[in-house]
Image (cartoon, rainbow, N blue to C red):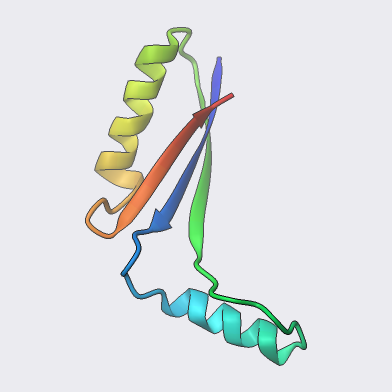
Length: 80
């Protein structure tokens, strides 16, 4: 069993209206000094695979095909 965490974030230069809304909400709640906020997604995935290299290749394929829009998003795969 292999466990992995995939983090998907918007690429630099891509507008992030949800992050901007969070930034303004935090300011309105009295959290001064909050800079830019960018939002993203986290996926925790368990694979019934013992080959770490194959698992990593499969996870990257999952990101490329479904979990991330690679035109506007970056992703990082961490295998535990």
